[in-house]
Each structure stands twice: as structure tokens, then as C-alpha cells.
Length: 491
Image (tube, rainbow, N blue to C red):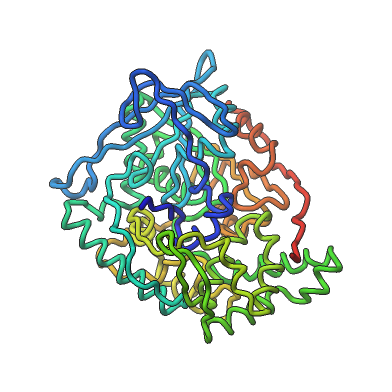
């Protein structure tokens, strides 16, 4: 079985299996037509197939790093990237794309809706789609065996117990097989980027990242800031923001509820969206409903609790096109129709699998004691409870000694030129939390795209133009772009 659950919070892949825009890590993979001298496992030139079948020349490369630099006995792993050569007469520093997740694959992102941005940035410099350790062709973690046991109940208790047990078992198996799982963290990931810089023969690199990619960029700036030129980051995630504040999502849902008033029919059917969601969650968590699903390709049934629906909603709120589905989805669930969940769930064997890099990386980034107390307090009354960040903080303590500590999570003073992009309807990295990260940058231009969501880079064509200008070295004032508001669905 090929595991497809690449999103940071494992069960959010439920939605992205049907709606890839929910998790860009799930974007369509590039179909690579090997040239006469290369295959996916070989370095060298090849034809890269991007969005809508458009092909371009590219070069695949590899380099080796220790799996855990802190352990002299750890094995070497091979990391992979694809380089799109610059069309400029005098290219600037290489632009390294940092995928989100953790667990997103840069080379897949390059073949999806961001493909035109990769191509446009070649006007400035080489553009590097770097598959981070544990992803794409940089993945040296063995796949887990096919899921054969009965699925857990999709309640908070059921899913938490499942993932804690499964991750402990996976960690033990991987360690026994010689995998240095302690090496899968953001500090080592940042050191990989500096090794990539040296491998490319570049004095400095530019960073272009989104979501977890911004979390990684912050670590790169902390550890190797003198080797970074400029940074363009979207959907910011701070050093201590691996676990998002549930109250910030409540604020977003109130904002969404206010938007429903623009459509009288929707407003009449859903007088109070957060109240409707709470009612559905409470009933299903108390009385999980039988729900038809696929399990390893065969028909099966799970018991869907309110927590499972909260996980699904945590994916849907990421971007406006799927956020608009909330009214119809919750009206159906309120009427007892769990069949509406089937298109979102895909094969639950994928959703219940552990892939290694996402879970280990989030566990290592961790959460400060102060923020953990705040998150737990807010989760008790929030619409989505503790579901948004699953399986964090639920995995805390499952493997001792991997947390990178308060020094890792400490804020920075950043003097690098920065372009910071956000969508006003981002339900994954809320604007209030992004503002906290942006305050660390002293030389920044901010771009707000009204009515865009988490995947803001491709939401508005103006963003691509600003990225090209920024990496050319231009400076400009804060910018506001606008998109139409979402159209909410009742059926």
C-alpha cells in the first residue's frame, strides 16, 4: 500500500484525498518523463511535467547527510531536489522552496498549482524544489505494514489511544531497523538546507516557504542566518506555534458566520454556524454513528464520533473553496446523515497510518508549558476543541527526550529582507498568530489577500508578480489584494 497521508495532522488527509487544495502536500505529483540517462533514482537532466501537462527542462540532484548529526554512529541518508535553471543573464542566489506539512513534498508542490510560480521565479535565479528528509525521494523511513486490524472509534479518546500506541510501535520498529528517528526534527532539517547550499556551491540562498516551511525557515535563520539572503514566507507558523490556539479558530468561525448573512437563504437555514457545529460534535462524540467507509479498498464501517468530524472541519476551514461546504455538511450531519462524510474519508487505512517524518518533527518542535496550558484551557470550550492540531499535543510524552526545548522555540530578531503573505480566511495559521511571527521581522513587506486562505501563494495572480519583484531585490510597501468572498453551499 502506498501511504498518502502527508499532511501534518494525519487525519486532515481525509479531506485532502478529495480536495487536494486542503493540504498542498497532496498536490498532484509531477509525472516525470526520464531522459535517456536518468530515472527518478538518478541525478541529471530530465523533463519535468507540471500543471496541465506543461513540460520543462529540469535537473534532479542528490546529496548525503547524517540521519542524526548528534549521533556519530547514525547512517547516512540521501536527500533529493529538483533544480529549475534560471533564465537570467546574472542569476541571484538560488531560491529554495520549503514545503509545508511537515511531510509535504516540494517536488509534488512544483507540479501542482504553484508550478507557474516556480517557472516565473526562474527569471531571477535557479529555483530548487527540495524534498525535506523523510519526504519524496528523500524518504529513507520504511513504510509500515498494511493496516489489518479493526479501526478505532473516531472519538478523541479512541483516536488518541490509537496514534499513541501506533507511533510507539512504529518508533520501536524503525529504531530496531537502524533508522535514527531522533534525527527527524526541524533543526536537522535546517542543517540539511545549509548542506544543500554548500552542495549547490552557493554563498547564500533565498528561502521561499509556506506553513511548516516558514517554521523551518525560522530555524534556518536562527542556525545559519548568515547564509540566507532574502525570505518570502506565507501562512506563517512560529517557533512555538506547532499547536494552534483553539480560540483563534473560534474567532475565524465567528468571521465566517458573519459572512453567511450575505446570503439570506443560507442565513435562514443556518442562523448560527458555530452553534450548529457544536451541537453535531457533542451528539456524535457521545453517540458515535456507524459510517460506511473503505478500508484497504474493501467496504467497511467505522463509528464516527464528534472528534472525527472536528478533524474533518479543521481541514475544510483551511481554504475558502472548502470552507464554503460547512453549512451543507453540518446541516446533513445534524439530520443524522453520516453518509455525507464518505467522499471526504477516502480509505481510512491511509488515515490511520504513521509515516514517521510528520509525527516525529512535530513532536520535536513541541510546545512550551505556558502555551500548552493555554491551548488545553481554550480547547475545553472551543468549537473544534483539541482536534485542529491532531496528533499534537496528544502525542506529547509518547517518546521521551525528543523535544528540542525552549531555546528552539524562542523568538528571534530578524533583519533579513522579508515578504510575508497571508490570506484573511486562513483557518490553519490564523492571522492573529501570524502577526506574532511577523513582529520578529524588522525589514518586512506584508501582503494580505482578502478572502484567500492557507494556500495563498496561488490564490491571486498578483502574489506571483510580487514574489518575482521581491526576489529581484525590489522593496515595496505593504500591499492588499482582494478576491470575491466564498459562496456558501446548502446542497
